Image (tube, rainbow, N blue to C red; front, side):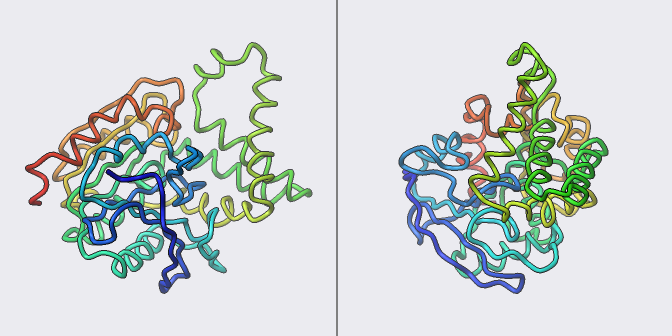
Length: 302
């Protein structure tokens, strides 16, 4: 059983110092779990305040494994912020360098959103090193629509005279892109209320992290506008989980990814009003499929 209690550690890489978190026995086979750009490696806590707390039930019943997760370079948490933004490939390489120092038995990677992109990149660059990958709310390249929304986020950061207002508005726009029109129709009776909610989300990010959270929009958001991963290079067994009305990783792109993957072993598409945020909000709908993928006996020998 993987308890929701982590031991933190720091690892030097050629791209900067990464802060990591280990759940479980350090000698057990490792599963990497990485979330979105605002994620912390502090996935789970005993008081249920972890960044991806809803995912813990998948791992709470797994025996003889450890989970490793990292704060992103330039993201929120304890990792370094490089002087210039890294590429998706460099972020993946940084995690690989850190993993080499902490485990010699990498069994799987579970990635949601940005974490899934990094998993695809890792698997493409080092096909012999990753047996299994569950890519959740993730595609091998950005959608044009999501890139446009990120361009506007960056414009708000760059052109808003008040730095804090720029952060608040950029986060509000990001939150709008993560959800669906259906959710806003169901949840709010007037656009004013919805707008206040989005501004609150931006203010919350700023209050919790200070001006340091600006790096989300200068170091992480931009690199998701032009990455491109060749699925044909991926030899890992890949499970795909996606969400209808997801503007970040739309089903059409996931279908293209599915077609190009050499070892695609299953796909689950979930209808949810939460859109892209379904990877956090709809864990119960994919928990069984993910557990089966991680424990399927025939995959253990891959």
